[in-house]
Length: 257
Image (cartoon, rainbow, N blue to C red; front, side, top):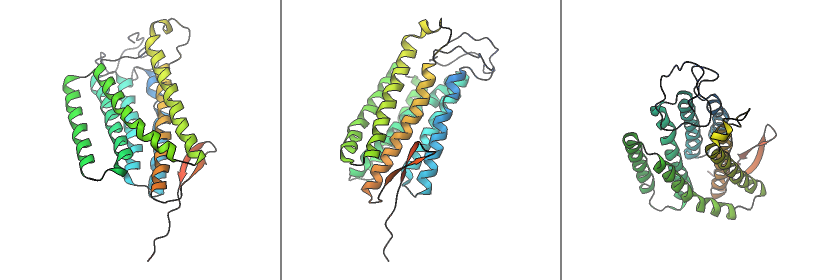
C-alpha cells in the first residue's frame, strides 16, 4: 500500500501488485518491512534441508528442491523490499519453476522415458519466463500457478496412502495444515485490506503467508524425501532436529563387492 512515511531508496513503485502493508515505515531501503523479513524462516529451513540432503547422499533433485525454495524466498524478499517490477518477476517466475520441479520429483519415478519429462519441463519453464517477462501476466499468472499446483496433489495423495509410517504421515498432515492456514492468511489479507488499514495493529496476513509457506515447502520436501528413500530401500525414519523440526534419517544398505 502506498502510505509511505519515508523517502524511497528504490524510487517509484513499478510492480503491478502491492500488499496490505504501508510502504517504507521502518526503512527507506525496505518498502514492505514485514513482508520482506518474513521470508527469513523459509531461507533457513531450505538451508537445513540442503545440508541434510547432501550430507546423507540423497539424489540431487532434493537438494535442488530446497535450493529453489531458497531462491524463491530471496526473490520474494527483493520484490517486497523494492516493489519494482523486475523483482516482482524474480518472485513469480521461480514459483512456476519450483512447481515444475515438484512435478518432476513426484512423477518421474514412474516415467519410462527418462529424458522426455525433464526436457519438456525445462522448455515449458523457459517459455513461461519469456512470455511472463513480456506479457506480465496478472490474474492469469495466479490461475496458471494454481492449476500447476493442483496437478501435484493426486500424486501427493497417492504417496500418502501408500506410506504406513505414522511420523511420515504426520508430516504430510502438517503440509496440508500449513497450506490451508497460509491460504486463509493470504485471502484475508487481500479481502479485508481496506478494513485492516484502520486497525491499530495490522495482522500482516501476507507476512504470515510467507512464514507458513516456508514451513509448508520444508514439510513437502521432507515427506517426499521419506517416500523416495522408501522406494530406494534406504530404511528411512523420521528424527527431530532441535527437538521439534522433523527430518529424514536414512540407512543405506552396504554395497556388496
